[in-house]
Length: 66
Picture 1 (cartoon, one colour):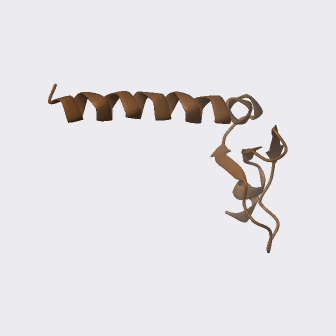
Picture 2: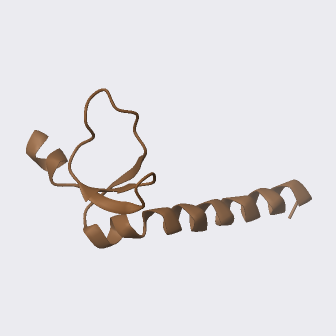
């Protein structure tokens, strides 16, 4: 199990890049993920923004009673 966690990808929001492996203990976590591939991790922030936009639209429709 630990090996599987070491092999996953994350998007580091502070550094603006994908990185592999677990977070260092004692450090504040500023990463999105985990993702299976580097490509997925590199799209992590964009995917987050897309998901938030979609959820905001659903909330708007809900509040309008649609």
